[in-house]
Structures are given as C-alpha cells and as structure tokens.
Length: 133
Ligand SMILES: [Zn+2]
Image (cartoon, rainbow, N blue to C red; front, top):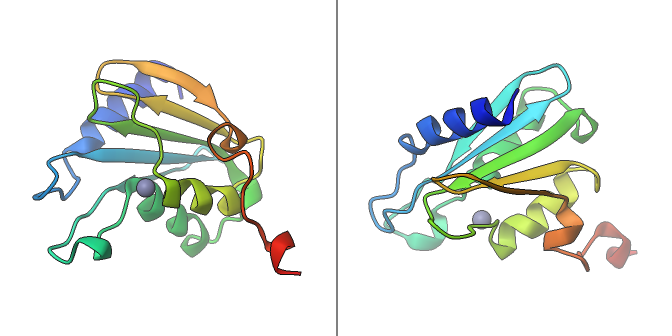
C-alpha cells in the first residue's frame, strides 16, 4: 500500500470513530504480511474510562482473525490533530507487547505523513513479561 493510499484510507476511516465527547477522531490500520488490513477507530463512552483508542480497537482483531504478531508488517495511525498526534501511553504499552520491535509505525495527522517509527521510539523502556519473571 502506498503512503498516499494509506493516508486516504486513514482519513476515510476517521468518520467511523465514535467521539461524541472529545470530537477527536483517530484511525488505525494494521497491515498484515498477506496484505490484509485490519482497521480500528477510537470509540468513546459516557463512562470515559470504558472508551478505547483506535490502536487498541484494531490490534486485538489481529488475534481474533487468527494472525500472530509476527504477521504484522506495519501500524498506521492518523489523528485529527493538526500537530503531532502519537499513541497515548496506554497504547504504547499495549503495542509494545503486540508487535515485534521492528514493526513500522506510521504517524499521520489530517494533513500529512509525519514520520515512520518503531515502538522503541515511543517507549524505550517498556514494561515486558521479562519483568514478571
Ligand atoms: Zn491510546
């Protein structure tokens, strides 16, 4: 998928967000090795903590559809920000366990592509299962 196509798909996906409170839509596409794309949007709730981010609405589907984390090629995220909207702290932790360290994380805002990263750029000292041993 070209960057331009990813941008267009993410922007179209923003309208499916459920954001009656923040009015801040976020979209996410997880691209698999077989080319399949798994979409996610943020979904809010009147009980605010019950809402979920776009990244954490997309990534669990990877497993529900029978894929493994090794099948993930990239995660593309768009916020409705005009600035640099990056994954929140909870999503950084969640992503750190759900993808390999080398998986590309593409960040977009509503105007343009802002850069390609890996999870270590956002969360250099992740809490992992190693800490539980
Ligand atoms: Zn988040």
